[in-house]
Amino acid sequence: MSVELNKKLNDSKFTRWMALGVVAFTMMAAYFVNDVMAPLKTMLEGQLGWGSTDFGFYTGAYSFLNVFFLMLIWGGLILDRFGIRFTGKLAAILMVFGTALQYYGITELADSNSVYFGYKAGVFISSVGYSIFGVGAEVAGITVTKLIAKWFKGKEMATAMGVQVALARIGSQAAYTLAIPVAKSFHLDTPVLIGLVLLVGGLIAFFAFSVLDKKLDKQIKDDKTSVDEEKFSIKDVGAILSNPGFWLIALLCVLFYSCVFPFQKFATELMVSKYGIDADFAGSIVGLPALGALILTPVFGSLVDSKGKADNIMIIGAAMLIFVHLTYSIPSINGWWVATVLMIILGIAFSLVPSAMWPSVAKIFPAHQLGTAYALIFFIQNIGLWGVPNLIGWIQKEFCISETINGVNQYDYTIPMLVFTGFATLSLVIGLLLKVANKKYGYGLEKANIEKK
Ligand SMILES: NCCCC[C@H](NC(=O)[C@@H](N)CCCCN)C(=O)O
Image 1 (cartoon, rainbow, N blue to C red):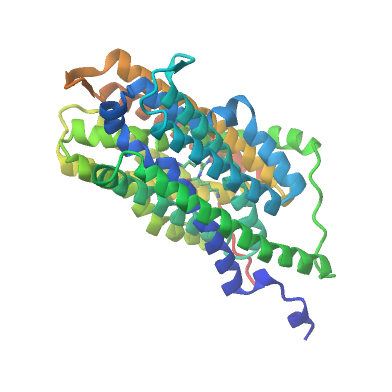
Image 2: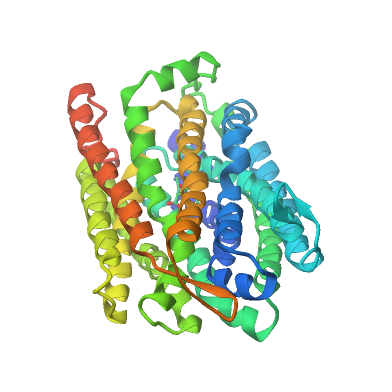
């Protein structure tokens, strides 16, 4: 009887997974908007005159406020101080506002001749919008991660994180697949408009989740058997930063993701220019890792839950990435099927590392430090997500223009792919160091997550 009385919302498998499904929708919409402009790179250059540096500037803008105005750090502190519901709603509102501004930039300002800070008005305002969206999306990301750690503690935590990431990848996959056909059938800005509508749905979804979460908090408070969680204090930042595990995970994260997300933003063009894949279809190939991750991330997540071995899984993922980028860099290997197989391998790596890395953070840090720990890791990751697209855009403009057809530049991707290979190699080195640190400090990364009854 008392067991029944103490039963909380998250003890019911159905309810915790339903709660996850609701917030996962918000993240799915966020990932759609995040990626929807990437396949349009060539169309943006042809129709709005966005060159490679403009595109790199816009792509990097996602992380600009997060990095230079420390928005992610504030977000993490707000999350640990004011909680999941407040922070999640705030993040969702920022995403909607930022996307609306981005839409304005590519519609109303498309033909404007004004220049701000050396960039066309349309490029600049869209980038400002994307930057605000980026704050919302990243803060929403850490909020969702923390809420999963709360709702799935001692349960299928890595599987849940894997499922959430997998569902988010549906958003990415849809963006890569639909952007060009939708833009061609309707208008260049229609994909962004669709994203805006989805995000409004995501905002409503987060409000709905908040009702459930409030109820859970009340049950936790009423439950005499539950241990009061320690409150976050600013001293915890020092504790997090002085943990070597933090630095290794953060470095692995920035290096690994720097050769996935920024690569994907340029990859549609690579598929068309180097591998001769039809532009309408190229986005679907670039979306393959997202599609593969949809199935594989939960599979690997449940493997980590039941068997552990997160340290080895991260190493294997990083090694696969080296192979992929190095092969993409070789000029003589240019068959469309090679490009496709490499994308599939990248998809496997892209499922292995996240499904092992994110739950590992929850092993290294206690619950009350998690929001800030994730925020700091996302912050360091965002330095890469800002810097790498800018770097690649600049490299392309300076060293890689192979020819110009009807005013649109064609780019050779050998150097950019070697740069990505370099990042992947460094991520492998960090993965190996993390394994050593795991042994030395006993983080338990090799252990299973699910508590044996
Ligand atoms: N439980 C943590 C989930 C993180 C998922 C991870 N997302 C990020 O790393 C974001 N900071 C950046 C998202 C950018 C999306 N294009 C992921 O693997 O997606």
